Length: 436
Image 1 (cartoon, helix red, strand yellow):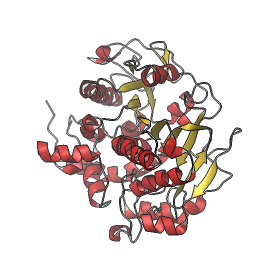
Image 2 (tube, rainbow, N blue to C red):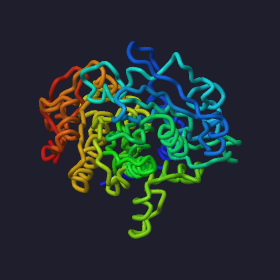
Image 3 (cartoon, rainbow, N blue to C red):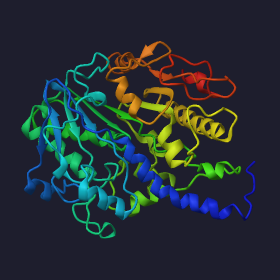
């Protein structure tokens, strides 16, 4: 049972909840990987023509034209990848992005700094099963987890614009008009962190959209699959803030981001199936922002890549500044990390129950998404002897059920994260064995 909160600790807890808004922003900003110059077939920056961007609303926070980086290789197989990079929760954060950052303005995008060596777009690594496909990288400049659906300025953001969904839609249409994309036989949608959120929400819409573009081109609809990386915001019954956890409370911060996204961002684009489910099952549409709520409505084949111990959510969003891979299992911070890991495992088990065909590759590492970048590039990650590449190939190319949860480290009775260099663990959460 939850311990009662004394009157002296209430101000601290309320302050912690208020502070969460800032930490969501500051923590999630680290989810975006800087562009890096890398040898190989080059990317080319394609900015939308100004008139097209204005007409379609495909603009960054500062109203500059959005666009994408493209590398054409296999003309029939394409990866479309959504960049991550947080969520601007307060007006000042959006302004900072718009004034002097590529996360808010395309004025800071350049041809000579392209998204090489980035997750599924790694071009010359044998660890990436999509290395030889054509690659499209959408830089994230809308601050809205790719869900903004506004063609004009937001009064609450002092005139800035949030149009992530419109940017993606315009990019697909532009690709169809300028490349062989509309006649592709296989198309994969991926994204990391905030881009992972966008991937979950857009998977079904994306499949329908590329099918429509194929029909216009007189082609057959392509095979479509989604690969969200670290986009599970949030596991069910989270976020529970560490300062509250430390005094025995387990009450999650209800509807924090859901209300913000559907309020400040409005109009917001969210998964149509979940919105319909909200009507039939009588829950608030805002809850559809939560991945643990909307996942069961996804119909497109989907392969989930995540860490069981997400550092961003534990350390930054949960405000557990003492949480670390070296935390002792029975310390308060260790208990909090294990608490989060259990919630993530329960959420993945739910995913498997409602969508048995979904692929899952969940490490026991204490990271957000940065380790997965390496898994596609130069660090072969294996779970139960199966590498990430092999797991994707088994699921995508061979249709095999592929659900891999890495065993945890430390005392099996107190499951904790494993070091990045570890090859295997011996522990696990209750019920996790059935998913391995």
